[in-house]
Amino acid sequence: MYTQSFSVPDGTEDVKSVGLKAIPKALNAQDADLQAAFDARIDADGRIEPREWMPEAYRKTLVRQISQHAHSEIVGMLPEGNWVSRAPSLKRKTILIAKVQDEAGHGLYLYSAAETLGTSRDQMLDALHTGKAKYSSIFNYPTLNWADVGVVGWLVDGAAIMNQVPLCRCSYGPYARAMVRVCKEESFHQRQGYEALLVMMQGTAEQKAMVQDAVNRWWWKCLAMFGPPDADSPNSAQGMRWGIKRISNDDLRQKFVDATVPQAKVLGVTLPDPDLKWNEARQAHDYGQIDWDEFWATVNGNGPCNKERLGARVKAWNDGAWVREAALAHAQKQQQRQMKEAA
Ligand code: BYC
Image (cartoon, rainbow, N blue to C red; front, side):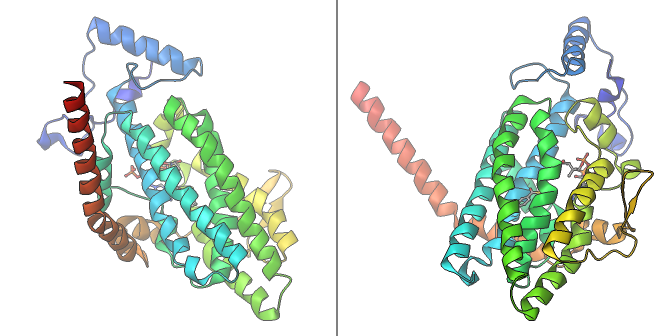
């Protein structure tokens, strides 16, 4: 039995008890049967589908993670979208437009997956716009030049794939299925970034220096993307027990470092970490200390671009109000016409 599943407050607790651990509620016989069936399905590595019974805390955890993921996709369009008008060639511009459009699509699949859990898109977007919801720390850093666009593809999308491939096996069906397509597209994103950098690294000394400088600025931020160390990750144990997360934050980070070191070698760049070295005993790379204070400052709204990113999303939402109203009015008109014709 997943007794921990009741340790997450379900939002109905007394206001005075906020911040305290919720006291497990006694289960009636019917709930206990449902819980047992849910636990058995999770233990057998089965999938949970939208209309099936699930513990409220499982539902809440999924809405939190999937909506944060969706927000990351649409906020993630901003740093790269900024470069569409300044891409160095028609080919690069076309690729970048396709990539940014893909991210919008990922946001839509993910909002749709989260909606199957009973939270509306408007509620999720309101949480983003009012600063209550999180989105990935990585999108609060600026893309200063074209090399940054390549490095975002190579490292940021590379880290995203590492984190997201295991989510294709998530226990919640709609999330897992959405992730299959997302990962296929992310894989193209990573390759286009790496290829753009390979071209720059065959260019002038100035171009090579631009790539190295971008790698220096993004490397540590990408390692922090995987989330706090396992020992400081409050959601990991329960997320893994429920089959939402399959691999821990630290294990994914390690896999990313190990996969990226040979890619950096082929590219001809140095990863900015004097402590980075192969550890024969662990059969993995050791690496240096991540600046967790900086990570938390960024997650809590004080990164270099947090205000700009949120401001851009709120403006897009407000500027788009007339489109939503017009689409709704059109749909209502059509419905009225159909009803008239049917009468
Ligand atoms: N940024 O207990 P933990 C992408 C929060 S890629 C901000 O370990 P969990 C893209 C965490 O939410 C990026 N916040 O949490 C790529 C939690 O706070 P709350 C998006 C972070 O959920 C290229 C607290 O720290 N990917 O989309 O077990 C182009 C404690 O953490 C971050 C996903 O969202 C962070 N980096 O694990 C375009 C993948 N890390 O919620 C787009 C799905 C942690 O308790 N998500 N926090 O207030 C996940 O896999 C997991 O949610 C995480 C965190 C690994 C991110």
